[in-house]
Length: 404
Image (tube, rainbow, N blue to C red; front, side, top):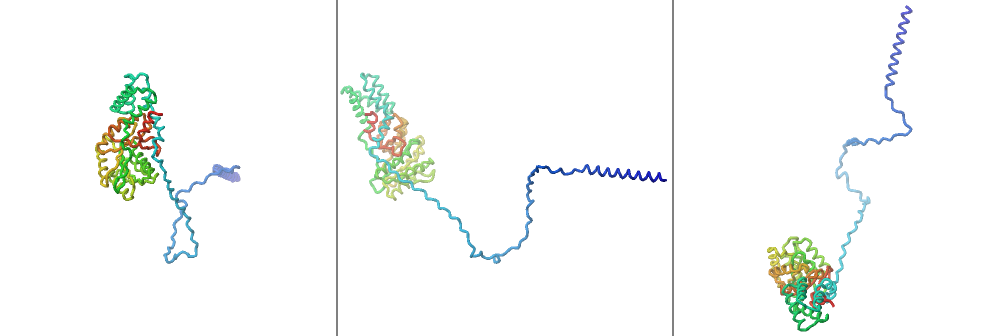
């Protein structure tokens, strides 16, 4: 019996030990947090998600206007910071153009540099000991190369041959004098080369400037305004070139420099209407001269040329046109004569302006275009400066050609 009781007790102890082992074993498998390290690791806090920190809206009692009441009259009112007024744009000082008298003489050196080929070439050939047929052919070639034209060249050569044969002039000074006289005879010294700016009635003188694209027509109009202002005339400009976007702005800039007002219209507007308004404004202001810049017509487009005729007719409703100046690029040579013929058929050209004469050795175009149209060259452009437009003086021109 005692043995049985002892066996039961031992069995109970064994069972209790096993249960305790299982409990301890289960606790050992549980993951414990790691021990704190000597160097703490900083982990950035997680960014809050949308709506996490949003506060639930609360109902608040609303107040009426009577309950709110007016603001305290004694409460100081913050003054608004003072706003600095924008400065008015500075009025540009008016420029004083150079006087026109003697301009071509002052620009003679610039002209001589580009034209020396013609004058010096002729003098060299004429100074040869033996003026045979080959030499006279070279003289002809020199004149043709300078765009003097076929008929004027033949005329000049014949006169030179006759005078050299009769007079026997062979000294350098004698040949220079002879050549000067013959060139002046071709240029013509009896032309009236003054730009007509007086109408003879109670209206301003009206000058219309025409020409093809690229000849410097708008620039010439602006420079002509300076010439007239330098001579004491008041000027109104008409920007009737509405086909080129920058033409009106360019002309207005020229006018502002010398105090001349510019009448302009919308881009693509009716050129005849703007020309009409320009003359009307000139009459109202009592101006001395109205300069009208027309679009650079392509002489191959009949419609545009017809429109140029319309501008002329509309302007003449105020009074006669006193001057129609054709602007030609001297560097185009004989092609300029083609342009001149077409323009002469549409409007009555009264004078010629040759631009870029300082940039070409083809000064003979002066003779050729005068012979073609029967009208004089009145102005020449000899540079890009604002006062590089000069009245044409035949004597100064020939002296620049043949040198001292």
